[in-house]
Amino acid sequence: MKLLHTSDWHLGRMLYGQKRYEEFEAFLLWLKELLKKEACDGIIIAGDIFDTPTPSNRAQELYYSFLAAISSLCRHIIIIGGNHDSPTFLDAPCALLRSLQIHVVGAAPSQVDDEIICLRDSEDAVEAVVCAVPYLRDRDIRTASAEGGDDTESLRRRAVSAHYAKVISRGETLRQQAGSHVPLIVTGHLFTAGGTTVDGDGVRELYVGSLDRVSADIFPDTVDYVALGHLHVPQRVQQREHIRYSGSPIPMGFNEAKQEKQVVCLTFTEDSSTPCITTVFVPEFQKLERIRGDVSHIQERLRALSAEKSRAWVEVEYTGDEIIHRLQDEIEAVCSGPFPRVIRIKNRTFVQSILPPEETESLEEMSPEDVFEKCLVRHDVSPKEQEPLRQRFSKVLRDIYEEDRGGADHEDH
Image (cartoon, rainbow, N blue to C red):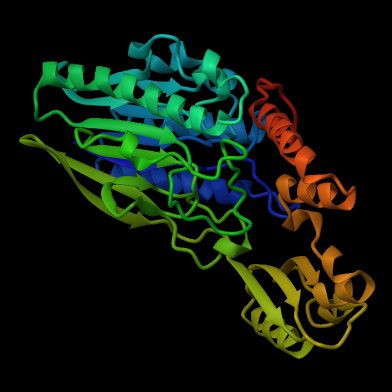
């Protein structure tokens, strides 16, 4: 049996006002062809299919068209919800999609067995057991002891661990019934301790305020593969080959422009549950380039891109010593055509010339927590009052991040 592991598509995401539907469509076409070329039996999509809980009509069209296209190619399609997804939206068509062997777990079900999927072959024999654990919201793991208190974060981590232990234990039982050669696969959409991120990749802290992420030890050695989502950098967890983030297939920002994107391919043999793991690099569908330097360097590079007829999207960051008040005019002097397209200009030197040093960060470079900390300092909040306010602010952020606004139709926002 051969499976592909992918995650964090973020369909509908824009980059500084630029719509990216052509990129998403090209990726999904490439992925469909890869499934066909590799003769894959299934695919696991580990969360954050959409960028918002209320995806646009175009994003929904891409999603459902892709599922329809691959339903005839793959016996098994497993989809879990991520923190960006609306669990209600993903779960709504579950019964219909199940008839096409498409298994969706948008939110943690009330019954453990509903979180476990037994993949069956053409003769109805179990060929894999999947513990399809989605992103766990507070309401999924809330316990009476986790309501408040100074140790709320550690209680939440223990609740996540307990949930996985319960689901994996049931999965191990079903695997034993099917045979020791049957692989046990676990999914997750979470932040593991030691995980690598990139500035500007849009990855949110899932459990706001947590200093220690979830330990990889929640996955016992009996698990043959762990398909994770949430972190956009492809990586193994704590150097364990079988615990992996596939990463986002499309760069979420200019900081990821040089990063090689990938999907993970798992091949299981009849006599072993240990997979052969390989990676397949995802092509670059929209070139992103960051140009940093003084005006002459920026203009020289833009001229070169223009001569190449490059269709790149460009971020320009001026780092020269001279204060340039009208940097956009300097750029337009050499880049007046449609391509390359400069979609972001950063002129830190000019900003520093008109604001105090401590105020030179823009809001887009700061997290909500950073802004809140600055407010605490600005308003001279005493150290004694700061911690209770931080806890309340963290709860407000969790409520905002986890707000399930359904799948209301609307166009791009």
